[in-house]
Image 1 (spheres, one colour):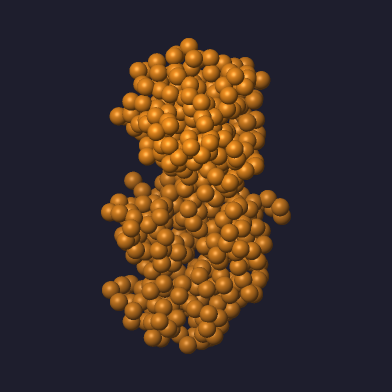
Image 2: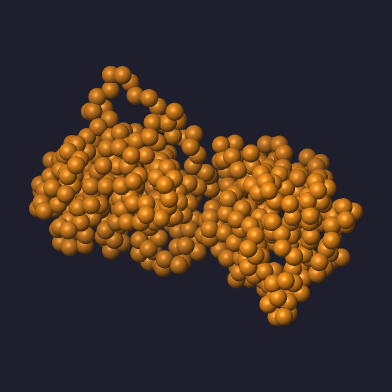
Length: 509
């Protein structure tokens, strides 16, 4: 049950906020800190046994502080349950204080052996220096880490990562920043992580999605009052959102009520992107979808999909009347950077219609910045870097800040694509609402999936209007369709594989 996202909270918090909830529970609600630690150990062990039901032995690396305390509790409870458990003490157990010391004593009373951790080269080279185990547990450092990991802890991280056994991290993988998802020198690459009290933003940002593995969550049975008044750093886009928006249609609905989309792109030699975007708009449920492409691209766009009303255009003047008749315009898929595409982008930016800007439409915008109140920008990290006069590495280092800056700088709903895509919109002059999509998979990292997303966003805007919620649901549907398509394997997945599953996902049961 700990990995059932349907029962998780929507809110994701900064680590300082989560520590505040913990402190509130102890100081205001009267829950002893050691009770919370025991609950964490209980739920971590339950998560571990559900994930690896055949596991009979554990090797638990314990450092300092409450994270180590959680590890000692897991050790005691696992031993009491009949498992073979050994602790690797990277920090002297006698140096522990408070609740962590009580947890250490609990493990001692359970008879759990504690091994010292040697960091000299000979020990690190000898794989036989530490016993094998069915599961390795990372209980080295908690969420307070703000500096590079070094010394014995760094050596322990290396040992954990060299293990052939699966790794469970408690609360957050050691070395991962709990707020930004940045890595402080080295970090544990976990197969699974169970986090406590509140979901942490660093598990969804930067390298968090890569290093956390399968995520589990326990609120340690805290009452909702412990969280009152706290504004989350992020919110999760949840599958229930689809049901709330994508309700069954009226039996008297007709195509004119289901929205009109115009896709502008498909320059000479690049018809595929426009085709993918247009078909995605159709599969989203849009009533009518037009595509304006280079004359040489018309046949390729329409091949096998006659429902796309495709027109070859030489100049922006040929689009003026059509642009007036549609509800939303998707600009950029396959449009290129030559004069033909640049002229079309400039013309579409002058309309008052809602816009979805993607691909080379974004590259044009990076060179000719402007603001407008009714558009969506869908950059991948490299495009975001150009829009922000930054670098891809800087964008990835702090994805939340980059998404927020895109929304503020361009007065847009900004979708920063990638692992755990972000949707951002400014709510006032200095505040941005951020949502994260925790679905999707690496198989989607292939040409054309961004074009599918742009068309899907356009199709849902045509039906429901341009709101942040509509864009969030489009991002979610796209990710879920990608997961459906990946059921046959991530490697070899292509963008068009998503199209049939989009239809399924926009008709939630």
